[in-house]
Image (cartoon, rainbow, N blue to C red; front, side):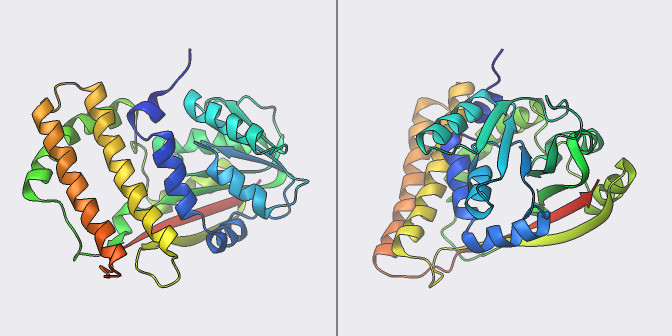
Length: 297
């Protein structure tokens, strides 16, 4: 039976792919590849590949001799990945549907295993043990784990009105239920505990690194096109979130409340676009830290 829970109840294909396209810039990918130690790997596995953004970015930076495999349990994500790979003739990337805690691969298959924002959703030790099993002796396993408790956000921005907050709070209750049902963030762990688990599972030469994802629309280096894309992706993601919740929970808001909420969201993002077009700077920013832990089998 196909599993579409994540793409239909948590984060859509568009939202996930666009946010990661913006996140994985060329410079950031250089940092990440150095930190996860896969520059010379020839057979690489990404667990929880989602829309395949990271696998495609890896392909751009690694040798074309490399073979990259992406695995995810969501059928919609995997179908999207396969479509992109076929349409773009990405012959050295393959995708398969499967469980991160029961990987459908033989022991000692891959030179490197990596994952981006996955470990917090699954039992940590079992997750690492499976990668230890399928990784070859001498290969590296790495995890990239966002730390929202360390995020830094600008305060003076175009915030939600009181009424928008009231309406959003109504659907946030259902969002919490969805997260509980699907174990979203259930296994979020202290970095020190994750480091200890790497050691306990049997990894050696354990490394600890950090990368900061920074979004600042008014940064001089951003083209107008990129600035607009950042704003529009935020807007589309919020609308998708609202519609996703309402579609699954019909009584989350009345029809009148839904129309009112969407109208308020539209007003807020029209203000942002108007400021951009008038070359008025808001200096809205977000700094999202990520830890990277890697170990050698």
